[in-house]
Image 1: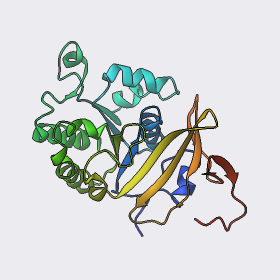
Image 2 (image 1 turned 135 degrees about the horizontal axis):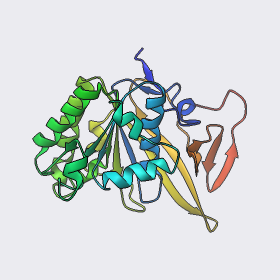
Image 3 (image 1 turned 120 degrees about the horizontal axis):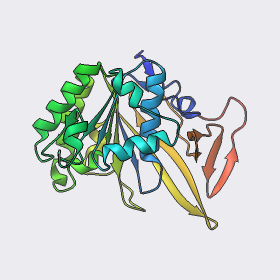
Image 4 (image 1 turned 30 degrees about the horizontal axis):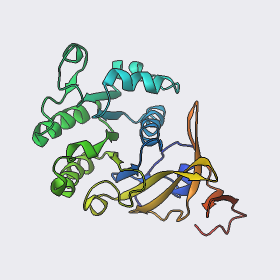
Length: 254
């Protein structure tokens, strides 16, 4: 049995029957406002509390903004950066502006996957990373969708080979049935999909684990909330036909 990596997100490890199998690459897919970034940052923060160094690859937000957003939940990573336990990879600014003065790891050309991987490898080596988040991986192939699966597989070889357990944030449009790119679902070990649906005039958040190699898991759609301390998942509740139902006892069909 592979070692399990705890997400530390309340309720999530119960749904995963103990956590994410070590070295798995998980696609965290969802539309706008579903909580993908919060989920991935909470995964990294909880890893730091378990003495597991982590890396956040910022592709869609300025690294300074990422740190500020995390701090709003009480996840202040600056101390861990100073201690060499957390690294931010700036793949957003291309080193333009003040980033080149403040950021240690910068990807200057996003069209050059080799440079991206080299910077990622160096950061993993420097801090002996155990957890990696790429937010969002969709940015790497949005203009070349035919390369989506190839890019996913190249990143997976690097990350699994270095012993990291990783989350690839994947963006989809509202109502889209896929997972954010042709063939990407076949290139990853796990898929967690986050959704935000209007039910009876109210938006409700839910998630479902579509697949996870190396472990059994709940096959139900579970509601979750975003609080001022992060995400809370309700493993004993299921969203069904627009209603939240309580699951009873141990025989809950996981």
